[in-house]
Amino acid sequence: MVKICCIGAGYVGGPTMAVIALKCPDMEVVVVDISEARIAGWNSERLPIYEPGLDDVVKQCRGRNLFFSTDVERYVGEADVVFVSVNTPTKTRGLGAGKAADLTYWESAARMIADVSRSDKIVVEKSTVPVKTAEAIEKILAHNSRGVRYQILSNPEFLAEGTAVRDLFAPDRVLIGGRETPEGQAAVKVLKDVYARWVPEDRIITTNLWSAELSKLAANAFLAQRISSVNAISALCEATGADVTEVAYSIGKDSRIGPRFLSASVGFGGSCFQKDILNLVYICECYGLPEVADYWRQVIGINDYQKSRFVNRVVSSMFNTVAGKKVAVLGFAFKKDTGDTRETPAIDVCRGLLGDKAVVSIYDPQVTEEQVRRDLAMNKFDWDHPRHLQPVGEPADQPVAVTSDAYEAARDAHAVCILTEWEEFRNLDYGRMYDIMQKPAFVFDGRNIVDPEKLRDIGFIVYAIGKPLDQWLRDMPAVA
Ligand code: NAD
Ligand code: UDX
Image (cartoon, rainbow, N blue to C red; front, side, top):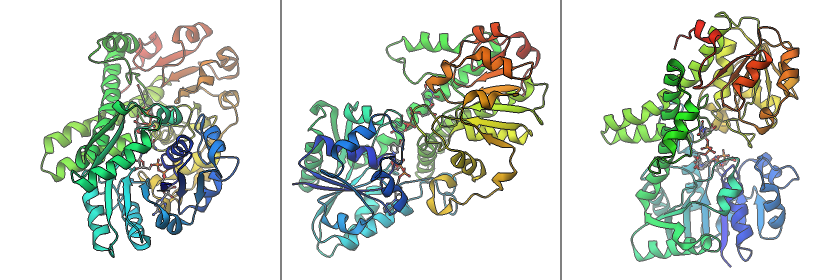
């Protein structure tokens, strides 16, 4: 029986291991974490992350061959294969601060593996890490080995939140990188055999270690680059009267471009894109490739521009001031079908509005008031560093309310900003909303989920990303 242990019971470790346990009932899978709260959540009826379909998978195998524990050392010691899925946030201080990946959590996991191992192990990088991390991990393990032999594999995860279970059941590909030695290739085969239980063989790609590590950073950079490209075009659409949805559809029909990941938005968020591009930028700089670094940095530059452009549009349309005006924010998660708020554009938009002295009223179906307040009080990049999770500001001082439905958020508001594409926001009764708002009433759709013409018919002044502007907005140009 292959014994698997995964260090890190987060958005990746939890769902990934649950699916492995489901598909491989003859293997024991234990997910361990230093966070007692997280493990208690995984062992409870209310899982610590919201992910469609996940409850069902966990219920089927928890207690059978899937276990969650804080006894990190015991289960790592007993395992044949150890996945490491700890957080790899952006460094907040010291060399490379604001760009480089912080490998503190990774290194401490590696040192712990070396401390507790008495039998040979395959160590699998599941976290997204800088290229050549496997070499550093090999050194740590080799220098502390006491005769135990290790093989390091890179097996980056490509799941997206909100569709994690679906992505894990039917991945576009599984990528496994290993050393090109007989021992390395034998380790690759062990992991390949795990995935081959449910993933067709032609979707399991094996490469060398560095290609696997770099492919993950490159894939995220390419995906984010598509969003920044369409968002850059959205600004030009607004200036010219073109419609970004029509443009995206037209270019996406070219089979060389393809239709996905071309939805203009208020900006991309999530724990991965910005962090991984910054990491890529830093690596390029370290290898003396400033032109390549600048190219990728601009993907983030456009994303920041898109978020501030949105705030500017809100403020300029409302007579250049939102001071004392109530603005309803619908959606705080970084995308629909998740409660995750890491790097959500809503944080920047709310801060921008609060900076202009607006009174902000927020509704999201999956994000708690506590989370919203913590996010708005936190320093940039601190969110993924558990030890720094203390709010820095005085959240109570902020004119922010968190409501339990969209209409409550909109009551007496001057404007509604849609920042997450939750299905329920498509089906709201906007006539009812108009009736309870101040006039003129504005809708700023940061996700292009409402029909601007229908809302204009109700009486709203409507701004939608990259869509032709109505006369009001043309008369009140936003300063970029
Ligand atoms: P997360 O913060 O949700 O989970 C990481 C967990 O690791 C935390 O619960 C933390 O307590 C635990 N941890 C940290 N150090 C530990 C240690 N020494 N021992 C035991 N537990 C420890 O992070 P995540 O979103 O699951 O991401 C994990 C990695 O996967 C990151 O490198 C990320 O870039 C990558 N990734 C994330 C996604 C995603 O959608 N979230 C997708 C693909 C890849
Ligand atoms: C991403 C990658 O897609 C996934 O492969 C990787 O493993 C982790 O990072 P995730 O961040 O969970 O996944 O979600 P994703 O669907 O990629 O969306 C990221 C952000 O981009 C969200 O804020 C989303 O709203 C935004 N987005 C996405 C757009 O603005 N437009 C699009 O067309 C697609």
